[in-house]
Length: 353
Image (cartoon, rainbow, N blue to C red; front, side, top):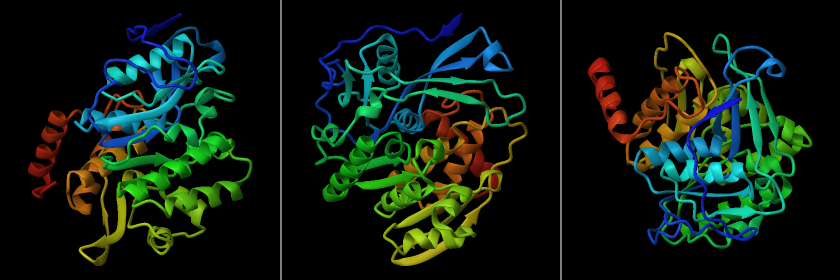
Protein backbone atom coordinates (compact mmCIF):
# COMPACT_ATOMS: atom_id res chain seq x y z
CA UNK A 1 0.00 0.00 0.00
CA UNK A 2 1.32 3.42 -0.91
CA UNK A 3 0.51 6.99 0.06
CA UNK A 4 1.49 9.75 -2.33
CA UNK A 5 0.95 13.32 -3.38
CA UNK A 6 -2.04 13.92 -5.69
CA UNK A 7 -1.21 13.57 -9.36
CA UNK A 8 -3.03 14.25 -12.58
CA UNK A 9 -2.67 13.10 -16.13
CA UNK A 10 -0.90 15.39 -18.56
CA UNK A 11 -0.88 15.81 -22.30
CA UNK A 12 1.21 13.24 -24.13
CA UNK A 13 3.10 13.39 -27.38
CA UNK A 14 4.65 10.74 -29.56
CA UNK A 15 7.88 9.02 -28.49
CA UNK A 16 10.83 11.40 -28.03
CA UNK A 17 8.92 14.62 -28.63
CA UNK A 18 8.24 17.54 -26.32
CA UNK A 19 5.12 17.88 -24.20
CA UNK A 20 2.67 20.54 -25.28
CA UNK A 21 1.38 21.36 -21.81
CA UNK A 22 0.37 24.95 -21.16
CA UNK A 23 3.52 25.62 -19.17
CA UNK A 24 5.85 23.99 -21.65
CA UNK A 25 4.57 26.14 -24.50
CA UNK A 26 5.51 29.30 -22.64
CA UNK A 27 7.38 31.68 -24.89
CA UNK A 28 9.47 32.91 -21.97
CA UNK A 29 13.15 32.01 -22.58
CA UNK A 30 14.80 29.65 -20.14
CA UNK A 31 17.12 31.23 -17.59
CA UNK A 32 18.64 28.00 -16.25
CA UNK A 33 18.71 24.53 -17.77
CA UNK A 34 19.17 21.29 -15.83
CA UNK A 35 19.10 17.77 -17.22
CA UNK A 36 19.32 14.15 -16.14
CA UNK A 37 17.09 11.35 -14.94
CA UNK A 38 14.16 11.94 -12.65
CA UNK A 39 12.88 8.74 -11.08
CA UNK A 40 9.76 7.82 -9.21
CA UNK A 41 10.75 7.19 -5.58
CA UNK A 42 9.08 4.84 -3.11
CA UNK A 43 10.17 5.71 0.44
CA UNK A 44 9.62 3.14 3.17
CA UNK A 45 7.26 4.37 5.87
CA UNK A 46 8.85 2.10 8.49
CA UNK A 47 12.41 1.15 9.36
CA UNK A 48 13.99 -2.16 8.47
CA UNK A 49 14.79 -4.34 5.47
CA UNK A 50 12.90 -3.24 2.37
CA UNK A 51 11.85 -6.87 1.90
CA UNK A 52 9.75 -6.54 5.04
CA UNK A 53 8.26 -3.09 4.34
CA UNK A 54 4.61 -2.99 3.23
CA UNK A 55 3.88 0.74 3.10
CA UNK A 56 5.64 3.36 0.99
CA UNK A 57 5.21 7.02 0.18
CA UNK A 58 5.60 8.02 -3.45
CA UNK A 59 7.87 10.96 -4.25
CA UNK A 60 10.39 11.85 -6.94
CA UNK A 61 14.15 11.31 -6.87
CA UNK A 62 17.17 12.64 -8.72
CA UNK A 63 20.06 14.89 -7.76
CA UNK A 64 19.57 16.95 -10.91
CA UNK A 65 15.88 17.51 -10.23
CA UNK A 66 16.60 18.40 -6.60
CA UNK A 67 18.78 21.29 -7.76
CA UNK A 68 16.36 22.31 -10.51
CA UNK A 69 13.46 22.40 -8.04
CA UNK A 70 15.51 24.29 -5.48
CA UNK A 71 16.41 26.99 -8.00
CA UNK A 72 12.82 27.22 -9.25
CA UNK A 73 11.56 27.72 -5.70
CA UNK A 74 13.91 30.71 -5.47
CA UNK A 75 12.25 32.31 -8.48
CA UNK A 76 14.55 31.33 -11.35
CA UNK A 77 12.98 30.19 -14.62
CA UNK A 78 14.39 26.67 -14.78
CA UNK A 79 14.02 24.27 -17.69
CA UNK A 80 14.18 20.49 -17.25
CA UNK A 81 15.54 18.31 -20.07
CA UNK A 82 14.91 14.57 -19.80
CA UNK A 83 12.76 11.66 -20.96
CA UNK A 84 10.06 9.67 -19.21
CA UNK A 85 8.20 6.57 -20.28
CA UNK A 86 4.65 6.39 -21.63
CA UNK A 87 3.38 5.24 -18.26
CA UNK A 88 1.73 6.41 -15.06
CA UNK A 89 5.06 7.10 -13.34
CA UNK A 90 6.09 9.33 -16.22
CA UNK A 91 2.85 11.27 -15.92
CA UNK A 92 3.38 11.56 -12.17
CA UNK A 93 6.90 12.94 -12.68
CA UNK A 94 5.77 15.51 -15.23
CA UNK A 95 2.90 16.67 -13.06
CA UNK A 96 5.10 16.95 -9.98
CA UNK A 97 7.92 18.80 -11.74
CA UNK A 98 5.53 21.27 -13.34
CA UNK A 99 3.79 21.79 -10.00
CA UNK A 100 7.23 22.74 -8.61
CA UNK A 101 7.53 25.43 -11.26
CA UNK A 102 9.86 23.72 -13.74
CA UNK A 103 9.47 24.44 -17.44
CA UNK A 104 9.11 20.97 -18.97
CA UNK A 105 9.05 21.90 -22.63
CA UNK A 106 12.16 19.71 -23.07
CA UNK A 107 10.81 16.74 -21.10
CA UNK A 108 9.97 14.20 -23.78
CA UNK A 109 8.17 10.90 -23.72
CA UNK A 110 9.67 7.63 -24.91
CA UNK A 111 7.05 5.00 -25.72
CA UNK A 112 9.68 2.26 -25.95
CA UNK A 113 11.11 2.41 -22.42
CA UNK A 114 9.81 2.77 -18.85
CA UNK A 115 10.29 5.54 -16.33
CA UNK A 116 13.03 4.80 -13.80
CA UNK A 117 12.10 3.70 -10.28
CA UNK A 118 13.93 3.84 -6.95
CA UNK A 119 13.24 2.35 -3.51
CA UNK A 120 14.62 4.01 -0.39
CA UNK A 121 14.77 2.60 3.14
CA UNK A 122 14.00 4.75 6.17
CA UNK A 123 17.20 5.86 7.89
CA UNK A 124 17.43 5.20 11.62
CA UNK A 125 20.03 7.58 13.04
CA UNK A 126 20.81 9.97 10.20
CA UNK A 127 22.97 7.46 8.31
CA UNK A 128 22.85 7.20 4.52
CA UNK A 129 19.74 5.11 3.81
CA UNK A 130 19.82 1.95 1.71
CA UNK A 131 18.52 2.52 -1.84
CA UNK A 132 17.73 0.23 -4.76
CA UNK A 133 17.47 1.38 -8.37
CA UNK A 134 15.47 0.06 -11.30
CA UNK A 135 16.79 2.30 -14.05
CA UNK A 136 18.63 0.10 -16.55
CA UNK A 137 17.10 0.65 -19.99
CA UNK A 138 14.90 3.47 -18.68
CA UNK A 139 13.53 6.20 -20.91
CA UNK A 140 16.01 8.74 -19.55
CA UNK A 141 18.94 6.39 -20.16
CA UNK A 142 18.08 6.51 -23.88
CA UNK A 143 18.69 10.26 -24.17
CA UNK A 144 21.37 11.30 -26.64
CA UNK A 145 22.88 14.42 -28.19
CA UNK A 146 19.76 14.95 -30.31
CA UNK A 147 17.83 15.83 -27.15
CA UNK A 148 19.82 19.07 -27.03
CA UNK A 149 18.91 20.10 -30.56
CA UNK A 150 15.67 21.86 -29.63
CA UNK A 151 17.11 23.99 -26.82
CA UNK A 152 17.41 27.72 -27.43
CA UNK A 153 20.71 28.70 -25.84
CA UNK A 154 20.60 32.31 -27.05
CA UNK A 155 19.03 33.61 -23.83
CA UNK A 156 20.20 30.87 -21.47
CA UNK A 157 22.03 32.24 -18.47
CA UNK A 158 23.24 29.06 -16.80
CA UNK A 159 23.57 25.28 -17.21
CA UNK A 160 23.71 23.04 -14.15
CA UNK A 161 25.06 19.51 -14.56
CA UNK A 162 26.09 16.53 -12.47
CA UNK A 163 28.16 13.44 -13.10
CA UNK A 164 25.10 11.20 -13.05
CA UNK A 165 23.86 11.49 -16.68
CA UNK A 166 27.25 10.54 -18.19
CA UNK A 167 27.27 7.51 -15.87
CA UNK A 168 23.81 6.30 -16.87
CA UNK A 169 24.65 5.47 -20.50
CA UNK A 170 27.07 6.30 -23.30
CA UNK A 171 24.35 8.22 -25.14
CA UNK A 172 23.60 10.31 -22.05
CA UNK A 173 27.32 10.98 -21.88
CA UNK A 174 27.20 12.32 -25.43
CA UNK A 175 24.30 14.56 -24.40
CA UNK A 176 26.30 15.94 -21.48
CA UNK A 177 29.20 16.96 -23.69
CA UNK A 178 26.85 18.40 -26.32
CA UNK A 179 25.09 20.58 -23.73
CA UNK A 180 28.41 21.76 -22.31
CA UNK A 181 29.62 22.71 -25.79
CA UNK A 182 26.43 24.62 -26.61
CA UNK A 183 26.35 26.40 -23.26
CA UNK A 184 29.97 27.51 -23.55
CA UNK A 185 29.47 28.67 -27.14
CA UNK A 186 26.47 30.77 -26.07
CA UNK A 187 28.29 32.37 -23.13
CA UNK A 188 26.17 30.74 -20.43
CA UNK A 189 27.91 29.84 -17.19
CA UNK A 190 28.16 26.19 -16.15
CA UNK A 191 28.15 24.57 -12.72
CA UNK A 192 29.16 20.95 -12.22
CA UNK A 193 28.68 18.64 -9.24
CA UNK A 194 30.49 15.30 -9.79
CA UNK A 195 27.89 13.44 -7.70
CA UNK A 196 29.74 10.14 -8.06
CA UNK A 197 27.86 6.92 -8.80
CA UNK A 198 30.77 4.43 -9.11
CA UNK A 199 28.52 1.39 -9.59
CA UNK A 200 27.12 2.87 -12.81
CA UNK A 201 30.56 3.07 -14.46
CA UNK A 202 32.42 0.27 -16.22
CA UNK A 203 35.64 1.32 -14.47
CA UNK A 204 37.01 3.89 -12.07
CA UNK A 205 39.40 5.06 -14.79
CA UNK A 206 36.54 5.80 -17.17
CA UNK A 207 34.67 7.67 -14.42
CA UNK A 208 37.68 9.79 -13.54
CA UNK A 209 38.57 10.63 -17.15
CA UNK A 210 35.03 11.54 -18.15
CA UNK A 211 34.06 13.57 -15.11
CA UNK A 212 37.35 15.45 -14.95
CA UNK A 213 36.93 16.40 -18.59
CA UNK A 214 33.50 17.83 -17.85
CA UNK A 215 34.62 19.53 -14.63
CA UNK A 216 37.43 21.32 -16.42
CA UNK A 217 34.91 22.77 -18.89
CA UNK A 218 32.73 24.14 -16.09
CA UNK A 219 32.96 27.56 -14.47
CA UNK A 220 32.04 26.40 -10.96
CA UNK A 221 32.88 22.91 -9.68
CA UNK A 222 31.31 21.54 -6.46
CA UNK A 223 32.97 18.27 -5.42
CA UNK A 224 32.82 16.75 -1.98
CA UNK A 225 36.31 16.33 -0.56
CA UNK A 226 36.29 12.53 -0.92
CA UNK A 227 34.97 12.87 -4.47
CA UNK A 228 37.68 15.34 -5.36
CA UNK A 229 40.35 13.10 -3.85
CA UNK A 230 39.15 10.11 -5.86
CA UNK A 231 38.88 12.06 -9.11
CA UNK A 232 42.14 13.99 -8.93
CA UNK A 233 44.40 11.84 -6.77
CA UNK A 234 45.08 14.91 -4.61
CA UNK A 235 44.66 14.87 -0.85
CA UNK A 236 43.95 18.37 0.40
CA UNK A 237 41.14 20.78 -0.54
CA UNK A 238 43.78 23.22 -1.80
CA UNK A 239 45.29 20.63 -4.13
CA UNK A 240 41.95 19.31 -5.38
CA UNK A 241 40.82 22.85 -6.23
CA UNK A 242 44.16 23.61 -7.87
CA UNK A 243 43.83 20.58 -10.13
CA UNK A 244 40.63 21.94 -11.69
CA UNK A 245 41.71 25.58 -11.76
CA UNK A 246 44.88 24.67 -13.66
CA UNK A 247 42.75 22.89 -16.26
CA UNK A 248 40.16 25.55 -17.00
CA UNK A 249 37.64 25.85 -14.15
CA UNK A 250 37.15 29.34 -12.74
CA UNK A 251 36.20 28.48 -9.17
CA UNK A 252 36.02 25.34 -7.02
CA UNK A 253 33.86 25.08 -3.91
CA UNK A 254 34.56 21.89 -1.98
CA UNK A 255 31.96 20.42 0.36
CA UNK A 256 33.47 19.50 3.72
CA UNK A 257 30.31 18.15 5.39
CA UNK A 258 29.75 19.44 8.94
CA UNK A 259 33.04 21.34 8.71
CA UNK A 260 31.63 23.67 6.04
CA UNK A 261 33.24 24.38 2.69
CA UNK A 262 36.43 25.54 1.00
CA UNK A 263 36.69 28.03 -1.87
CA UNK A 264 39.48 28.62 -4.32
CA UNK A 265 39.08 30.72 -7.44
CA UNK A 266 39.62 34.05 -9.12
CA UNK A 267 37.94 37.16 -7.69
CA UNK A 268 38.48 40.49 -9.41
CA UNK A 269 41.42 39.14 -11.34
CA UNK A 270 43.15 37.81 -8.21
CA UNK A 271 43.13 34.23 -6.95
CA UNK A 272 41.60 33.81 -3.50
CA UNK A 273 41.27 30.84 -1.18
CA UNK A 274 39.41 30.53 2.11
CA UNK A 275 37.15 28.29 4.19
CA UNK A 276 33.74 28.98 5.69
CA UNK A 277 32.61 26.91 8.71
CA UNK A 278 29.43 24.87 8.53
CA UNK A 279 26.16 25.62 10.30
CA UNK A 280 25.47 23.85 13.57
CA UNK A 281 22.96 21.01 13.31
CA UNK A 282 21.52 19.54 16.51
CA UNK A 283 20.08 16.40 14.94
CA UNK A 284 20.71 14.82 11.53
CA UNK A 285 17.57 13.17 10.13
CA UNK A 286 18.46 12.30 6.53
CA UNK A 287 21.68 13.13 4.67
CA UNK A 288 20.33 12.43 1.18
CA UNK A 289 19.98 15.67 -0.79
CA UNK A 290 22.37 17.72 1.35
CA UNK A 291 24.87 18.11 -1.48
CA UNK A 292 22.11 19.12 -3.85
CA UNK A 293 20.87 21.76 -1.41
CA UNK A 294 24.46 23.00 -1.12
CA UNK A 295 24.57 23.36 -4.92
CA UNK A 296 21.26 25.26 -4.89
CA UNK A 297 22.72 27.69 -2.38
CA UNK A 298 25.97 28.22 -4.24
CA UNK A 299 24.48 28.53 -7.74
CA UNK A 300 21.63 30.81 -6.67
CA UNK A 301 23.94 33.11 -4.74
CA UNK A 302 26.46 33.40 -7.56
CA UNK A 303 23.66 34.10 -10.06
CA UNK A 304 22.30 36.68 -7.60
CA UNK A 305 25.67 38.41 -7.85
CA UNK A 306 26.81 37.66 -4.30
CA UNK A 307 30.46 37.24 -3.38
CA UNK A 308 31.98 33.74 -3.23
CA UNK A 309 32.13 33.96 0.56
CA UNK A 310 28.43 34.83 0.76
CA UNK A 311 27.68 32.08 -1.75
CA UNK A 312 29.38 29.59 0.57
CA UNK A 313 27.42 30.89 3.54
CA UNK A 314 24.18 30.29 1.65
CA UNK A 315 25.37 26.89 0.42
CA UNK A 316 26.31 25.80 3.94
CA UNK A 317 22.99 27.09 5.27
CA UNK A 318 20.87 25.16 2.77
CA UNK A 319 22.98 22.05 3.16
CA UNK A 320 22.46 22.15 6.93
CA UNK A 321 18.70 22.52 6.49
CA UNK A 322 18.55 19.53 4.15
CA UNK A 323 19.91 17.06 6.72
CA UNK A 324 17.32 18.11 9.29
CA UNK A 325 14.29 16.89 7.32
CA UNK A 326 13.27 13.55 5.89
CA UNK A 327 13.29 13.65 2.11
CA UNK A 328 15.57 14.75 -0.71
CA UNK A 329 14.10 18.20 -1.39
CA UNK A 330 11.66 18.95 1.42
CA UNK A 331 14.10 21.34 3.10
CA UNK A 332 14.64 23.54 0.05
CA UNK A 333 13.17 27.00 0.75
CA UNK A 334 11.28 29.50 -1.35
CA UNK A 335 12.73 33.01 -1.74
CA UNK A 336 10.83 34.54 1.17
CA UNK A 337 11.94 31.76 3.51
CA UNK A 338 15.53 32.06 2.31
CA UNK A 339 15.50 35.82 2.90
CA UNK A 340 14.28 35.26 6.46
CA UNK A 341 16.87 32.54 7.11
CA UNK A 342 19.67 34.81 5.88
CA UNK A 343 18.40 37.71 7.99
CA UNK A 344 18.55 35.47 11.05
CA UNK A 345 22.02 34.31 10.07
CA UNK A 346 23.15 37.92 9.76
CA UNK A 347 21.73 38.86 13.16
CA UNK A 348 23.53 35.92 14.79
CA UNK A 349 26.87 36.27 13.04
CA UNK A 350 26.86 40.03 12.66
CA UNK A 351 28.02 39.77 9.04
CA UNK A 352 26.34 40.16 5.69
CA UNK A 353 25.15 36.98 4.08
